[in-house]
Amino acid sequence: MEKMVIEGGHPLYGRVKINGAKNAALPIMAACLLTKGTSKLKGIPNLTDVTTLCKILNHLGVVTERRPDGSLEIAVKEEKNVTAPYDLVRTMRASICVLGPLLGKRGMAKVSIPGGCSIGPRPVNLHIKGIKSLGAQVKVKDGYIIATGKRLKGNVVYLGGPYGSTVLGTCNVIMAAALGEGRTIIDNAACEPEVQDLVNFLNKAGAKISGIGEKNLIIDGVDELNGIEYEIIPDRIEAGTFMIAGAIIGGNIVLENDIACHLTSVVDKLQEIGADIQISNENKESCNGTKYCECIVKSNGEIRPTNITTLPYPGIPTDMQAQFTALLSIAKGVSIITERIFPHRFMHVAELNRMGANIRNEAAIAIINGVPSLSGTTVMASDLRASASLILAGLVAEGITEIRRLYHIDRGYERLEDRLSSLGAKIWREKE
Ligand code: EPU
Image 1 (cartoon, rainbow, N blue to C red):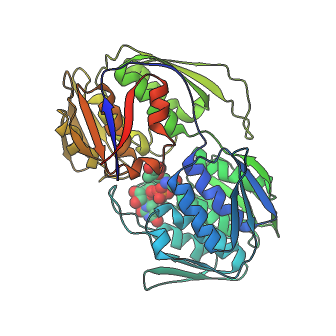
Image 2 (image 1 turned 135 degrees about the horizontal axis):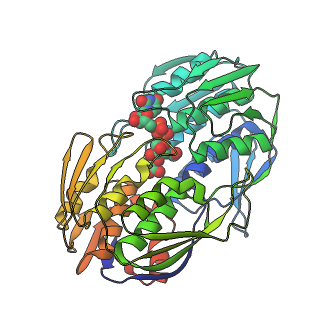
């Protein structure tokens, strides 16, 4: 096992390129199950979650290959197997995103039910409700969702749950309906940029989906989809994490290959509390017309307190909550964070408190009394974004911070320590 070691107190200067989005890559890779021929996906990051999904796809008769140019080629070779087994699914809850395409293309899917995790319960009732509305027969047996239905039939599907819509549930219904018969309307569809990217991929492959980024998505079933070349969007959560790195320790960094409009709420909040963020060079265009840019993040490390509520897109993402918690722990005053997507997602609070933060978590709220400084110690990462928040805290803490259970960070950030080192941070891996 490895641990991350950080010597705090070094401001960040320089340029860093934002990688492709994990949460766009995973459903788009799964969507290749719907296609004939080979797809060439550019910008797929090197992450353990991507490797896990490749293993599941391989198990389902799909060949996946990294090409020398970094792209990932995906080709369906045989379509007999319809099972995503527990041993693969248990390591990554996003494996549920093979449910829709398997059912839509092969007429049957048997997918292990993902358990809960350290960010709270992860129900799949809306996924099941969605595919049932399209005519699938669904039963849950021996820990598996078993769904059957030869060509699914379009219908109106409402996807609202207690915490709003569902990102992967929307992706599953879109993929199940893409090769179905007639028109499906998803009411209260998730609008996240990663869902939009999936729809752009499918439309380029031959699907007929309109209402991209809107609450009502309209899917007119087609007979087939073809393999294509496609470049996925940059990772807005990775970009936001680097922005907070710049804000927490100070300095002047430039993020390359970002899409600013995916991060408006985060940029707005960071500007409000003291970071200077400028967007420049909107030059390259993504396939849906949004512009790639550079973001310049300057800060003197002085942070004002604020209140934050996580919300579905375009609100502040839950995947940025832990990083904001770390940042606000050194703000000059009291901040309140309300988590409206995963109300139990506060495992990082106890670890930040071990570093000298003063945070109280009650129900879905964290009350953060800003402290003048944090101090390095040994802490445990509990999930991907919690790991990121501890790294951010380590950048500003006095002395040495050691982060254990490092495997979480490799699920969602590619070589994070190398990229922070290139900006001047003192951060490295060691054997535990
Ligand atoms: N929910 C239900 N029923 C369902 C599905 C979800 O009640 O059938 C609830 C959830 O419990 C939660 C809310 O709806 O309270 C939203 O969950 P959602 O389904 O949108 O989450 P997800 O699709 O499983 C994706 C991301 C998460 C991100 C959430 C919210 C991927 C691979 N994962 O999960 O990313 O936090 O959307 O934006 O896209 C991460 O990258 O660290 C991560 C956890």
